[in-house]
Length: 65
Length: 342
Image (cartoon, rainbow over all chains, first blue to last red):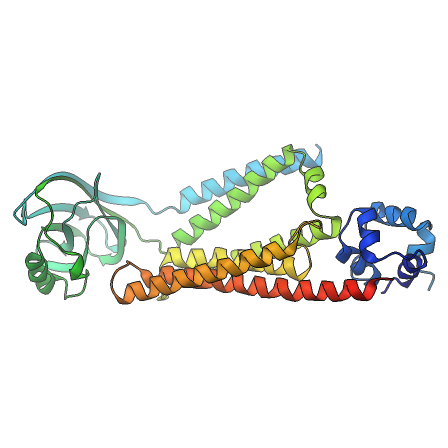
């Protein structure tokens, strides 16, 4: 399932996939795979992404539906 | 017991089990003979003209006849080997300048078997012997020259071992398994995780792990199929070592292709363009090598040129495939990057 919340949070900060990837020390393809729902990141990576985007884990990774 | 200790213990036990299995399955040497013979060459005549080795077979069955013909320096004369029942019934012939571990599976009755080794020092002698015993074409005649006069110290060995045609594949599979378990032992003791994290991110590490697993399963299945084919005495068109090399290439090809397809071949800060260039250059060079080997064989300049050419060709094909795959992935990534720019 696509992670549109992550994509929206990144776009809100005017950040490209590459910029986010550089900040959390992964490849751009990994960020792309997370956004497309092809890869489930570890909790460590989730936390790093949340800190970079100033969001909580619930806001980005908790699926309400 | 910690996870690391468990892995080391299982690996050590695994290595011992594999070694025991390899020893138990190894073909047994049932009879042998060996001789060291000084051969004098003077005016294209060898002295002695031939020498003989013999083995006594006690039980009826299928045996691998293994012939070694070696010297510290390559003698320039041809050695023709004729394996006979008694002294007259020819069962197998082979020829070469120097050969090691040349083997032939034969169904043997109990009795005395003789290996006659002819020292062939001129083209005339070769043609005479070739027509009489080798049915022609056993050895390329253009390599038979007039050897320099001198004394050559030849070492001949004849062995009759239990025939197990599948053993080569079992041996290589065992070596691969031992290699994996030795790697596990060494990597368990080292600070591997932190080093791997510097190279690949967590998704790439997971993908690479999956690719290695798939390559190993493919190799395992490939070798098991070959073992079964050998057990049923299937006539395989290529030599065992060529088939083994092809299996290893296939596994490596699967590993690299799977990693490239999932963007896990290069470390995330590495430039894949260098990889594309390297793969293309490899493909071109190996393709050229394949042509040289193939046409060399046609002109009788290289031994087993077709099989060597096939290995080169296969490696070139995998390199070209990986290069094309990398180009496609790189183009896709560039497109995605352009699209994703805010």
